[in-house]
Length: 171
Image 1: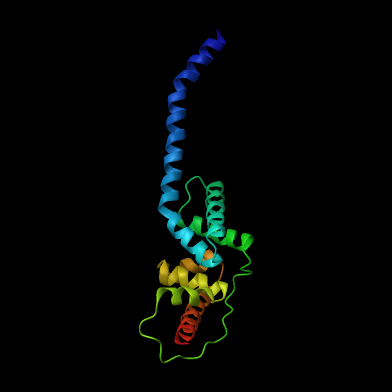
Image 2: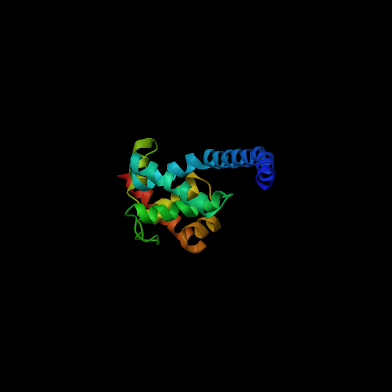
């Protein structure tokens, strides 16, 4: 008798379980779709390699989904920074730029390819700060929380990155 009751109870719960599984899959898909372009873009510009960027993106979402059932953008960003530290040779994320010289004259018509090459020449932390702030529109507080630096270091890194970009594009 017990097995028949258990079978009836299990049969009653199967639709609920299937719905819950589908809801989880839908949620993870929505989170992935809502963040994948940003994560891939940052991964690509940090690694300068499409295949590595795809690996970093995959590992980022696996890490974020393992850390939280409902990851938000900041959880995903922290997972991305962790993956970048582990899978790529970016080193320790600290502001490293030497003071750049003040450049008064920059070409008026800079090609996108020249700008991308210049961004790739920035030190890793300054590059990530520049991409997060000027490309992805993060504020300094969020950048600082994500990377593990202070807001002042974030601001200083962005300033140095911009000066270095001007210097690189002036040549």
